[in-house]
Amino acid sequence: MQEISTPDAPSPAGHYSQAVVHEGIVYVAGQLPLDPKNAEALPSDPGAQTRRALNNVGVILEAAGSSLSQTLQMTIYVTDIDHWPAVNAAYAEVMGSHRPARAVVPVGNLRPGCILEVQAIAAQEVPTGTTI
Image (cartoon, rainbow, N blue to C red; front, top):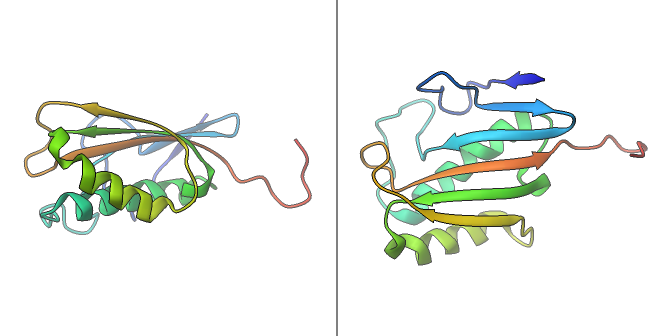
């Protein structure tokens, strides 16, 4: 098991890793829409928060030898289901044609100002010429 840490994503606020890799699978902890260089600079709208949270997931996946295109499953926790149309549109924009399995879970409050949190599971990239 390998713990993943990158300064390009927000530092964990508790006793957990940004991600853990086990047997070629990357488990990314829930990511809020925080700027890793300034946690107080929160985007104000749901679409921008979605893009920021997915960016955080993406840089963690890259640090683990994976990418958003290798995502197998995502869970999106959203504080108000009324934000869903904007969240879904931004998600589709970032993910493009890749459609991993996904769950959307309405929740109570997250960190003040945050309307969503994104958790992911992805496969590590397989080097060219390698067979599994």
